[in-house]
Image (cartoon, rainbow, N blue to C red; front, side):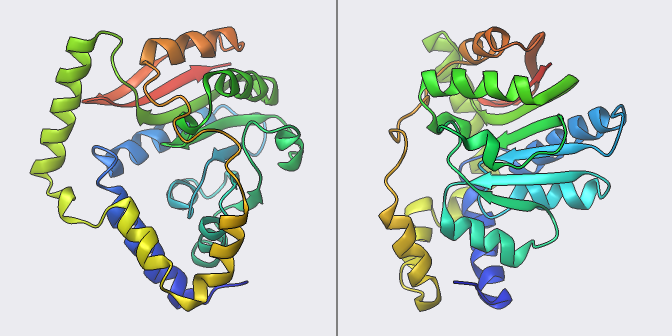
Length: 254
């Protein structure tokens, strides 16, 4: 089911464009995440180790690898098509693992040979249920060295409705000024991918896999709720280090 480089390049480039619709200042958010990992990696006792949770087609892993070539990255996702795009387009950025985050045995499938310096994620963890998120945060805490970090970039609403409405509006206006809504959306990307014969086998595998969690997951869980779950999971402190509208980068320190 290996893909040609040309096919992978075409679909990853389209993915990058459509994802701009869903992450306010997406490139800046990636840069902030890399800044945090760079800071933590400088204090690593050995070669830094990072896991990318819900890596998709390797967007964050590739940026981290270019910025921090001395960091080992393990990238995990459950989507066979997106993983194959990552392997074909960014083969040297990470070691890619097919696993369902939060499912029984998923941490063992990572094949880690030492404690993590960092776990990173962008717009992926909200697919877990609140209970699954709590369990996953605890598992990651146990896999991490003291001083290691979990870095999560996602849309996290304010706890109060009035503030949530304002922060959401600020983010939408920013996106409109950047004209990101001119790009195709998520549904259009998948519809177009379904018409590409080279992707047919991978899409068939994708369809055969039933979601491990409901699609709503923890969408709508507030920033405060995430911070509380992180503290309960064993992280000593947690807070936002970057925000634009309701788009955050949250850091939790082991």
